[in-house]
Length: 210
Image (cartoon, rainbow, N blue to C red; front, side, top):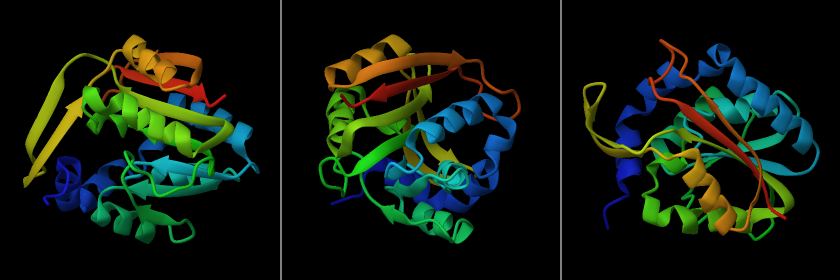
């Protein structure tokens, strides 16, 4: 069986992606503020997953603030890069649509731009899987590109890939979360940071498992 497209896409560009994005939070004060609040609520409460971790910058940020953070990514190459860049943090390969964790195992999930690779017809089932592994009262901090388009890449940084980016409206994503059984605490948006990231509006939702 062929690997999923987003695994095929990120494996060839893991090093390039890390070089570009590993230090991105230095230029994203809005994201840092959200992560600081997220960390304050989860510190000392149990494991917190950086889901779709890429090179591990979110896990590292949370770890430095006293959170028991670890990373999970579908791309084996990305996991290897993350482990090399963050030797004191655990990273593992796994699929967010079938998580390698028991029900109620995690205190929190930070899913920064990982849901964007899930087709809309599988978003609800994926969010239900995230809810399954959270303990009661556990938090999900979700980020995504705001819009309605789909961007497909066949080439990235000169390397062949097959990768789809799905954009979502905040209202639609909030609806998915509520249908998946989450309580939504906050829905936020911001303009893109010019010269730092793709020029799309960014959406953030903080949700809680009842």
